[in-house]
Amino acid sequence: MSTTQVTRALFDEVMVPNYNPQQMVPVRGEGSRVWDQDDNEYIDLTSGIAVTSLGHCHPALVRVLKEQADKVWHLSNVYTNEPALALAQDLTRETFADKVFFCNSGAEANEAAFKLARKYASDHFSEEKNEIISFVQSFHGRTLFTVTVGGQPKYCQGFKPVPGGIHHAPFNDLDALKELVSDNTCAIVMEPVQGEGGIIPADPEFVRGVRELCDQFNALLIFDEVQTGMGRTGSLYAYMDTDVTPDILTSAKGLGGGFPVGAMLTTDKVAPSFNVGTHGTTYGGNPLACAVAGEVLRQINRPEVLEGVVQKNALFNAELEAINAKHHIFKEVRGKGLLIGAELVDEWQGKAGQFLAAAREQGLMILMAGPNVLRFAPSLIIPDEDIREGMAKLEQAIAQLLSTAEAD
Image 1 (cartoon, rainbow, N blue to C red):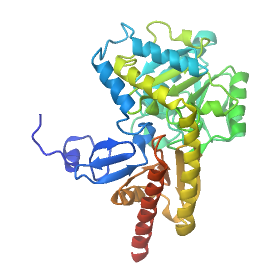
Image 2 (image 1 turned 30 degrees about the vertical axis):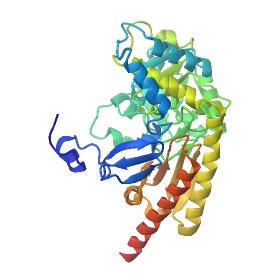
Image 3 (image 1 turned 135 degrees about the vertical axis):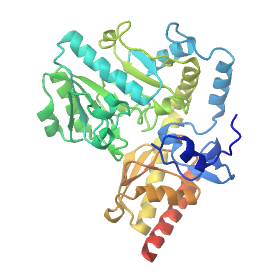
Image 4 (image 1 turned 60 degrees about the horizontal axis):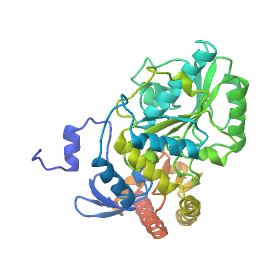
């Protein structure tokens, strides 16, 4: 055990500098509240980027984790295990899917989805049918494959050459997509709500059009629901609010309620292309992760929780509109359920990070969705009073920031 004092300054000494965390170190949490090393209290409107979907230290999740810890922690996929089988059964019962592949993160779930799409096309058509179409400003993970499929070139800088056969169309632009799709397209991948791209919901007609193009060109439709899944938008998965069903769906983040787990869901039609030996993972389907995720699913997939997400969205929007009426700081507030983005007005574009720091000083944790958008993705069961108090702290942070800017 290290005897060095653990502070934020230690991060800069021992950690690779790909992150720049806030200037405090959280040490414990309960519900939608977090405390740092100095026992300062914060309202958490981030849930670890839409991950701790039931808040911090939810008693049911703690209980299930402790129970499984006394049984078996890890087996590898040389063997199966009861929690993984039970979770797969639950997911297939509650969704369109017939088959599930477990992994550890959203990037791994998407990596599996993209590989499966290419393998399916190779099996049923030809190796030339390997092109994947994604959308500008999309985000699908940080592996070399997933970051290339993502529509943000900045994340590929310095990592070339990158995988080929990938094209990007403007989001919500069906005519532009029609120009790209061809007989060589094996899959179109989309987020029902673009997350990192600025919290931009897909238009219903666009979603239907994408499905029709996939059917026309024998391409698979992949829904990246890493961020929108597990109740985040008010349905168990966001595709359920559309009249479209994907061929492959990816899930992670909120699936484990804070315990790392990912899943790729697909159909009996597509799944056989991942025959024995074609893909794998050491930790995927881990008993601890699957036991927790199974309880997360049971807790979230209830009418009172999902309906509550919709109601809390209305409260958030009302509070943000009140702030904007006073300070005129937001160009637009958008999103769905408890995935909400507030785009900053032109004069504050590129400065979202300043609002995170100002909010922290007021005892509030928020997120960015790119440099121009404040993102709110709290626990799905955050109390209404925490929303109101959090918005009051946000208003104080904005007022302070604007006052300082005027003084300068």
